[in-house]
Image (tube, rainbow, N blue to C red; front, top):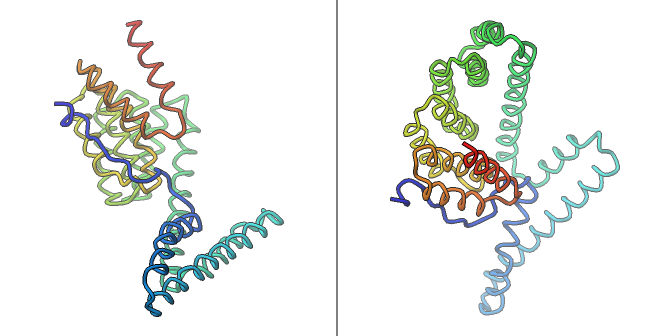
Length: 272
């Protein structure tokens, strides 16, 4: 029963999104010992040349990284320019173009998030007015997952959980396979739980935990997914499974932030 209710993940790498140079250096460092071993046991000149090429690339990455860091330290205000120059040096032309496109999309998403958040914040004392203005904003930005997500929050603040759930599901569809869909799905589970739909919330989290790649930024949310899973299982009376989920949450949590949340929840539950 436990393995069905609490999906268990085997941890194979640190759950974080490294920056580009960290990822590149980590990749080559991972292969460097193997390269050394190949060089020792195989006299084939071609294979040895491949090992030498690998170390040259590693040294180049380190050199460019260190030089970029020095420039950033000297002129922090020019960090974007220095980082862009570093990417141009280290990435092949096609990869650089794809990287530029991802950065452009990220900047545009951030602008949309900031605009919608500003509307919600401006009307935080009047939830109904927040719904009205963000509805207008969403109408002006059709097919915008961010607008729908903040409209869902606005409806949640009025107590209209069914509409918040509908909008959040619509936002998730618009996100598709985007990494951000993971955080949207987590919030959907929160809304379902608040609406008393515990089994639906449980199913959403179980699927999310199985689907979340640990090697992305949103892999760092696995501790939060497991923490929420435990809360839902506790609400369903499955306290043993809840504790299994929380044990998983702690095993994935490098920050130490989850344990205090678990303890606070248990204190609250004991006081009920």
